[in-house]
Image (cartoon, rainbow, N blue to C red; front, side, top):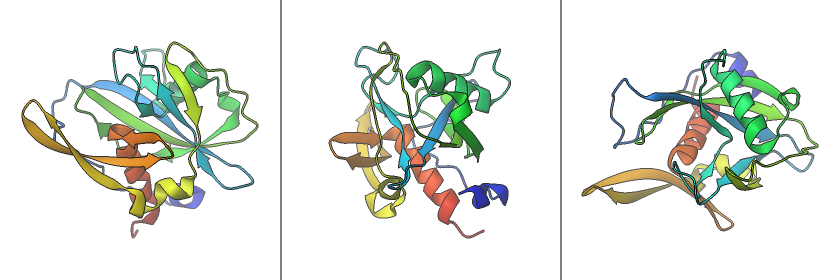
Length: 189
């Protein structure tokens, strides 16, 4: 993973059918946290609380809206990860960025990939995060687990990526960014 980022390879973005090309999108960033465990790499994901206005109950990466005080998407991702799950920035080795991901809900998200060194002494923001879990990175990067599903929104059918894992439904932007990570790591240079 380090080598691929250091080579400067850029994968094509994952573009969903229902996302417009409008320019007035809200800037956001997420940390794509790869936890380096002795038993194998995992991905730290959150289950959002059910009462939130945006993306309630969904699986997501730690992250959120960029603030004026954030110097970069990396700063946003690290700040949000610390606020949401208590992940100390000193435990994260930033590797690089994946292509921006535009959502149908008006966000343009910069995924920032980082290696996380355990032990994790997480402290969840119980207003935003119901729980955290760690699916194996190997499962998430296996294209056999990348499903295309569809949903009807305002009378139109739209496809999205999904990766169900042990009772969790990883879908939408989070799954799309995982597909982007797969393409980044395995595409021909």
